Image (tube, rainbow, N blue to C red; front, side):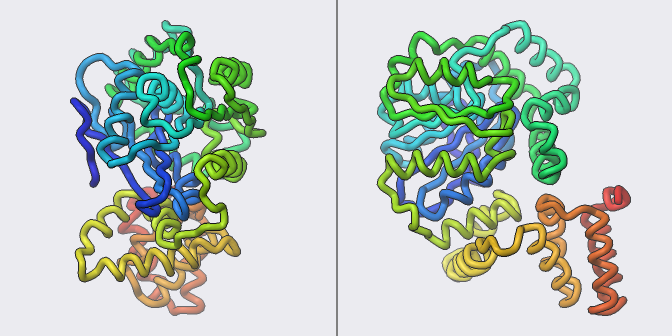
Length: 393
């Protein structure tokens, strides 16, 4: 698991895409992790060096004792960029990540090639609201606020249009460290960057969700006015975490801005970078990192071939949606008696939108076309992976 030490922090990060391409660094929202950027990594990793990291106290980056400030988070980001040998990076941040990106551009302008500030603000009162949220999380855990947070992150339509992504990000939220979350709440409470916005010299784009109840369009307009030459884009029919709710619309805005400033050919496609991004989005960042790290010189060509062919060309083909591809993989693994691969793809299939009822129907159909013993194996493997969760069907 790649970690970088920055002063008193240890930051988990993920890197995908050509090493010699322009670097794009993503900073996550309060309560989110690198996985919130899966759709953006997939869109960009074929032609950019895409770097995502977990803010301290989030995901796999441990919390550090003591108070925290947005300026401290910006120093973390500056240290990460420097440690990776990057001169200047295109920096994209959402919510808390956008606050971190603003402070980075103010205090470490030499590290910023351009800035995309999403669903964020330079000041976000009231202070007592952040105190109350921090105290609730410290006393009762993140489960006490998860429903309220999801209602701000997504429009009600998200539960019908993409329940699998919503459920996945909900699980990632609940896995965060309550102490780290509370410390970041208090950092937002104490933040006020308004007087320094005029110091931001990097080309900047502000992006807002049309239905965001947290950082509203009016706040985005104020932020854009405070930064010389900043542009403003609105993502329609989207709430706070629009990068996950409206990925196609978000990616179109982001790619147009980055391509215009980096000189990268929009038609360029590095299949290895694209394939690794797809593989991470389906099987998980840590699984793919382990596979690549453990390959060694003997197996690395094989890992790269799988990334290019299976995940770049096949999974990268939009003719079939990922839910359909997941169901095909599971059915074929049952028919071929490939237990290890079936178990590897089962939870990713649920993440890709396969319901438990659909999984059961798939396994029953394999009995007709691949035989009852094969289907018996599939039901047993599903129980091995899901345990009592399988009875939620």
